[in-house]
Amino acid sequence: MKQSIKKAAVIGSGVMGSGIAAHLANVGIPTLLLDIVPNKLTDDEEKKGLTLSDKVVRNRIVQSSLQKLLKQKPAPLTTKSNLQLIEAGNLEDDIEKLKDCDWIIEVIVENLEVKKSLFEKVDQHRKPGSIVSSNTSGISVEAMSEGRSEDFQKNFLGTHFFNPPRYLKLLEVIPTKNTDPAVVSFIKEFGENVLGKGIVLAKDTPNFIANRIGTYGLLVTVKEMLEGGYSVGEVDSVTGPLIGRPKSATFRTLDVVGLDTFIHVAKNVYDKVEGAEKEVFNIPSFMQTMQQNGWLGSKSGQGFYLKQ
Ligand code: NAD
Figure 1 (cartoon, rainbow, N blue to C red):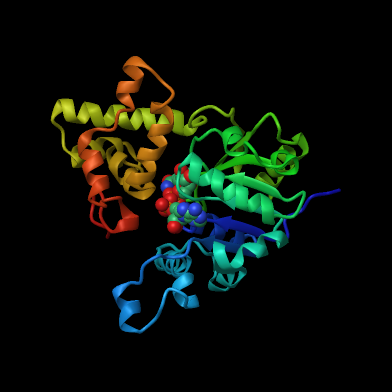
Figure 2: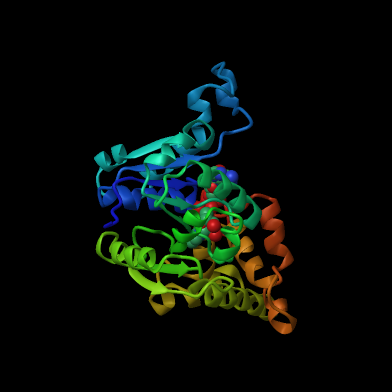
């Protein structure tokens, strides 16, 4: 049977999930975008007399991600009408809708146990033959699919988009030993010809290729900065504008990625290496303090820089 993607689902509407949903909408694919249900009312919701069971509250996380997307300049949606191709909802109320989707992409927090528990639910609600993939930055793809049905495992792989998904061309595709080769070929072809990506097949090793190199390089830079007594601004100048990379300086990139996500991703390697290399992946205490303070970058309004 020739595979096609008539409808997709993206689970997790944060920095990456909302961007991936926008990219799918831009190529004309109707996309269900789901997130979790909030467990607390905001002050504003309380003032309006809303409760946790009101739909507007239950869908608040994904809706606020979409609002943030629309405010970005340049907007990740090529036209405003593409927004209509994105159906927002929450996992509890809308999980049945996964059975209409040909490709379900998981884009939630970088944590093996949380991802595994989501895949258990997805396995129960997806249609047989649908492709399921994870946008993990570097958790073992095979470990995420442990315990799942044979059909799930055949159709499961890693599809690692880069931030921001609309602009960065790289898509790492990570099959496991159980992934059907026809699914890998399909995703490679679809990724290249429909999504406009440059596909790199990666092995299922911690942080795959780009993040294995990227997290190492960034953490070495931070350690050199601390030892040399340099400032964030100095490092960003010499790793950014001064060498012709206006938007990709070290700490500006961290603000775009999100410090919590970066720390989770570095931990993927920390847990697997020894000796001097482990030392590099040991997150400096000032970064841990920033995470505890909620200074996560653009998504929280403040990171190494204040959001402009
Ligand atoms: P994020 O923190 O911006 O968003 C995560 C979203 O997942 C949040 O909206 C949260 O409410 C939701 N979520 C958490 N637990 C959930 C659950 N059980 N069910 C449904 N939704 C849940 O994170 P992000 O930066 O978008 O990263 C998501 C994934 O993509 C991670 O695996 C990360 O490693 C990977 N990734 C991130 C980047 C990046 O630059 N930020 C780049 C490539 C890959």
